[in-house]
Amino acid sequence: MKITVVGAGNVGATCADVLAYREIANEVVLVDIKEGLAEGKALDMWQKAPINLYDTRTVGVTNDYSRTAGSEVVVITSGIPRKPGMSRDDLISTNAGIVKSVTEQVIAHSPEAIVIVVSNPLDVMTYAAHTTAQLPRTKVMGMAGILDTARYRAFLASELNVSPKDIQAVLMGGHGDTMVPLPRYTTVGGIPVTELLAKDKLDPIVERTKKGGGELVKLMGTSAWYAPGSAAAQMVEAIVKDQRRVFPVCTKLEGEYGIDDCYLGVPVILGKNGIEKVIELDLNAGEKELLEVSRGKVKEVMDTFDSLMAQV
Image 1 (cartoon, one colour):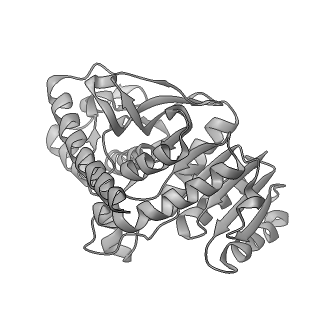
Image 2 (image 1 turned 90 degrees about the vertical axis):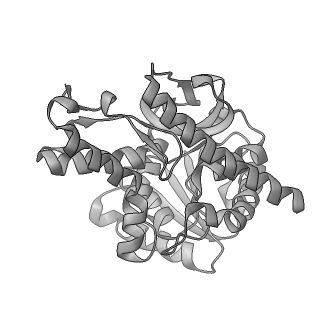
């Protein structure tokens, strides 16, 4: 069992570390373009195996994709992170080329792999990877919804002073300010959150969730990494262990929710085959309207990507 993580920056290294610590696979291969970076971080992780008591071997390589051959799952975190004042959409011209190149190389060596994209702007980078890989939509997906719902749940846990373990939530749409948190599908120990929080308390939490990534960029000067890396690792675990977990995942919609040929976050069942099923919720008129706004925003950036690729 081999898992590859492309990109040994903060997000990729965190993902690889969580995968190793939780013993999700026999081997985790970390790949980066910077000489020695992946090798050093992988060695550091392996040297703490005797301390944290895990067996997963962590291996780092510089641009040697032959070492990734036979990977069951590949996580792509490559690309430049957001800087203060930079929107996710500003990243498209640089990161699209990186994601396409990485996808070509990983698929050449692991044609049966399931691909998880973490690079931003997330929804459009998933589009770039999917069209490049030429695999079924069930095998190429983006990690965003798990991160966004985690932020939402964390904020709710703080407000209610309860364990985040007891909070379940669904969040849909694009990864950005137009994401669609769904309070109607949010529960705390099975209790609808709307019975525990008044609207004037809940609305600010929803808005904070939408801008969760930007809040961290302002605080740190760069994108988050602990939560995104852990979220990607959770998706890998669900696939490798065939857990059939229900997660919000970015995928290509093919008629679900009345949307076709657009990449958006929706709840799915995640198992050994990747996306086992897309779950269609019975959204009300207001929720549908918000999802349509999100779809329009993502489609704009997809069109920008198409225009850039046409010029290459």
